[in-house]
Image (cartoon, rainbow, N blue to C red; front, side):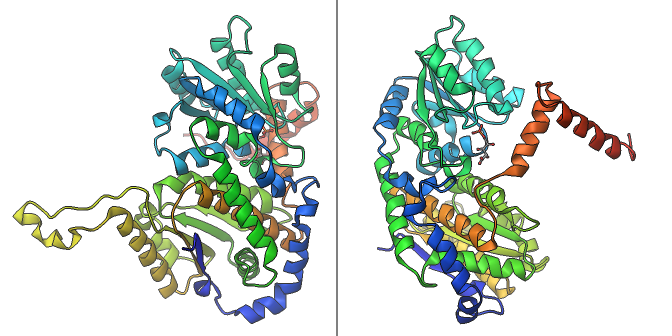
Length: 444
Ligand code: PA5
């Protein structure tokens, strides 16, 4: 049984494997060389070692979280998307169904926070605050608000867990002062590569996800990717194909999983790919698309609109639940007889195939990725695959896939607008940009 099966033949366009090898082979090998386990200590590369991390502390925090009725996980970007992705892929499509109930407070939209608060206010609730920098506006404001509700008496020890850098930022100091629980995000691991660190694992363990299996799936994938040095390595081919198409005018990388359990996976991928690769005027825009829903929304554009995308269709071969369609009971519906005994998840896989075939018919580059099933082992492998392929693509492009200066700029402008000391120049800059924008104002 193959857990992962890649079909690349629909993605070569006017090229071929030998041409790609000639053009990118040496550069790709050089990039892959940097992604060796030996480099895992270097800044940004720490995710390579996460599959080996001893997670006793994580499990003990997870065990503690199991004692609550509800968990509110506060964080944004890389400090939230991994948890959303794991919980949805392995447990419930509807978040409130988990046990403990698990809510992610990412966007600081007051309506959303109030809705979460309403669900948990009368329950034994843990607050998990995740921020590597320990100062992100969206996270820290919601943390302050929730603490004012749940820790009125100044007792943070009994209900707060912070997950942050071991020394930088205010959360570490907060944990020292209050004695609340703390888990450390390794120095060398950036936010969007951190799902297999305490950032994703503590909450995952709490809701009953087998974190050992998740890590062993990631480890297995790592061993396979590090051992294969030719273009038979699916990560190398995936990276090289995207590079080739980007250089030939395709500027979007679409991920289209056919499973409602992978909607957040596509969100997670979009952050990983976009934030890692959008640099120096390069980078294909990641597009998250959900099959079969977007088949009825985007497929027309993808088949007959501009030829500017590389599309990865992800098909889940075996759904964990089986639903068989019964024979129509009404005479009027007899024309639907051919649905009888069709298994719903199986139909979704066939729809993935129809979409991929339609795209190929239109000459659009398609990569087909089939997953045998979606359990911890396979998901761990898939996470590692996409982290690896993203880093490899970035190194192949000659950029640093582990920094995010554009994101940091936005954070500084936010601090400036909120009146934070030390950000006065940034406040002036925002004023200047808006004065320029205001030169052409239209009001209705
Ligand atoms: O990948 C990244 O570095 C970012 O998306 C961060 O995860 C995000 O900005 C949140 O940052 P922090 O964890 O410091 O609050």
